[in-house]
Length: 120
Image (cartoon, rainbow, N blue to C red; front, side):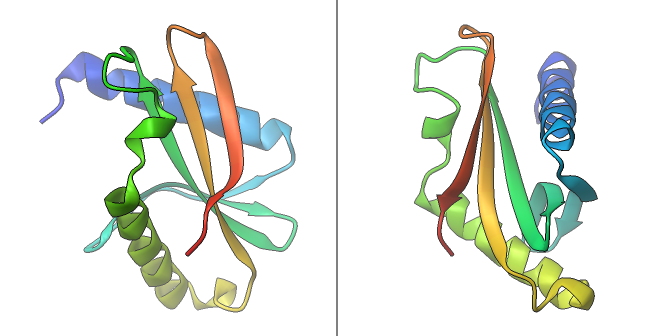
């Protein structure tokens, strides 16, 4: 279980990512959407496209940066959760979708928004 400061850093990163995406015209559909298959940090709407956003924050890059932390297993969990979201939220079921990543590495003090980060 993450300690409180780590949880707070994660929440702060999600807030920063959400603000950034909203400034670029995306609209929030869901935040921290939980299901038996996992969690979706942010579900956004970009025009008519449903965007599943994974927010990654790294304070220390000793084991790689924020983007490096999204391996094939994590991608598969996100895909399953997104499929479940679309089943439960049927109004979006026929919309185009994509997977984005917002990576924040504290040592760089910058946010990196990677659109279409991986395919389902």
